Amino acid sequence: MKTGGQLIVEALEANGTDRIFCVPGESYLAVLDALHDSAIRTFVCRQEGGAAMMADCQGRLTGQPGICFVTRGPGATNASAGVHIAMQDSVPMILFIGQVASHAKEREAFQEVDYVRFFGDIAKWVVEIEDASRIPEFVTRAFAVATSGRPGPVVISLPEDMLTSEVEAPQALPHTPVETYPGGAELDALEMLLNGAKRPFVILGGTRWNEEAVTRMRAISEAWSLPVGCSFRRQMLFDHLHANYAGDVGIGINPKLAARIKAADVVLLIGGRMGEMPSSDYTLLKSPYPDQALVHVHADAGELGRVYRPTLAINASPSAFVEAFAKRKPTAKPSWADETAKTHAAYLEWSTPPETGPGAVQMGPIMNYLEKVLPDDAILTNGAGNYATWVHRFHRSRRFATQAAPTSGSMGYGTPAAVAAKALFPERTVVAFAGDGCFLMNGQEFATAIQYDLPIIVIVVNNGIYGTIRMHQEREYPSRVVATDLKNPDFASLARAYGGHGETVEKTADFAPAFERARASGKPAIIEIKLDPEAITPTRTMTQIRDKA
Image (tube, rainbow, N blue to C red; front, top):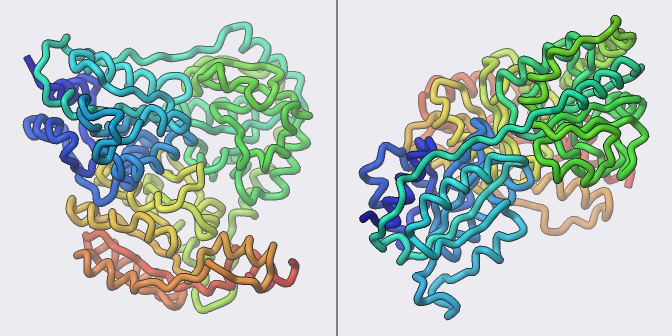
């Protein structure tokens, strides 16, 4: 006889869980008690949204579900932001929520929420435990659902009496991973399309990649001289300094790259869904019928033909697909090799930051400095905002598992993601980028970094406004500013108040020594960059946007 709390922890152990992220609550005390005697490491966080984003980051960087525990009502609703990110980003994650006891259900009991209804549209599967003896079954199934097909978040509601009840239950066994392989006929058809192509292009995206698959994809691109772009916030899928890399297929795409994709006769989309952002609002590839011959490779059959009608649909995971297709070779030297080289040259030009701009701090030289000093395996995280343009456009990613950023465009992600990344890879440099508005949405997780001695470096780009919204506001309603000004704390002093290292950068030349001091401190650090709000994008000022409007 075991309690439901013990069964939860045993099922997690059986499925390889080595850590969880949580905010404690009385609704799942029995699970916390069982964790006391477990080898699973428990990270206590400061807000449920941050905890859920940490779990998302773990799933994003490892391919295995990140685990999060929160309490009912406000705890669960706070965590919903992380669940939405994991769903839109196809990231495996499992959220466990303490629930009111079974006898109190349907009475609007204290903090009661119907989680099946609440999370139904933003999670891959939602279930409430109604029989404690089935806990091993449901937890193992959660791992299978979260990782198979198109990965995503699973939510398990845990009524309090299900956790304290003592029941007999079967021993939990690990889930069986499900791989989806391409068929020989599909590979033959793709080989024929590529051999007959004149202007092919490859776009990598989605999840279910690993380092071996990324290496194989590089070999495929070399064998076929294929130009390769990475979908929005999936830049870690291809070495940016490789001769075949074409650039980021996302927000603010290089116009030359957009033209190259539109002119392609064959587009090979591997792993991605080609949603609104990477498709430039469904114009890069016309929806639902692209001008190009589209070959769509995806692990979930439900995504094939959902938005775009593919010429050839291949139901396979990215890792299984590249393993199989790596054996295929072109029948003749590809005629487009010179165009591939030109496409990479255009990327290098596009990803060279400007040296000048308004104000005393220039982000271009700062990005150049970081490119020189950050190791290839450094992990960069960020949330959302115009500041992120500097990272996505000018950081040249070299390795797999070096990027954690929400394709859903959620703010507040960078700091909690950095905490999770540093906990996973303590030997690697982890740098979080945030705007002033973005940081203060989940900046309290800097305290979690302090608590667990995780020396992340958070770069807060402070321009005193919600920059992206102000930019749109000035374009659509010039000089009618409302609800976009911010009055901020001294972020460097805030870091020191938490027990970390703080730096303030008011001139470009201040950044390099500030970064070196932050890195040498051995503490979690915040470097505040005071950026002129005129420097709203790398190429346009706020005044230029307003005047053009």
